[in-house]
Length: 146
Image 1 (cartoon, rainbow, N blue to C red):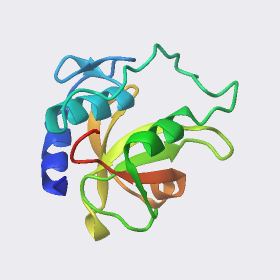
Image 2: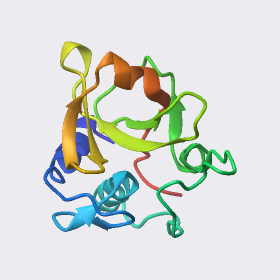
Image 3: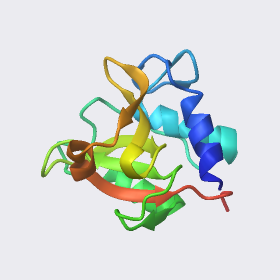
Image 4: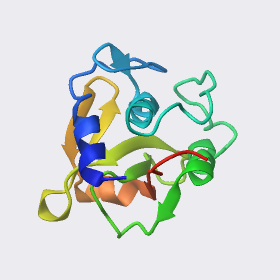
């Protein structure tokens, strides 16, 4: 999958309002909804339907649900092997489950990522050191789902 295509697709969602569990460009999405929408646009139908989830999903059980799903459908990459279009999975607090997603846009000195952030909608943020420290996993999108 071309990183440039992934970045262009993700940037096409910038300005979409944050709406929990939604995945409609321009109308609303959350971080998972952004990834689901880019997936549909570039790869095709989603490989599985996202179950209903709460804002604190997986936390009470300590369940690494997004990491497990990511490993099922995408190739895991070393954290330092950054490329445009990579899927980033973040752990928002030390010891918490990883449950925030973004798509890497810029690399190197201009490193950035596109993500849906509560209170902000879909934005492109610098991939600063505080964000880099939170990366729990990095994945490459597949070209197709088998």
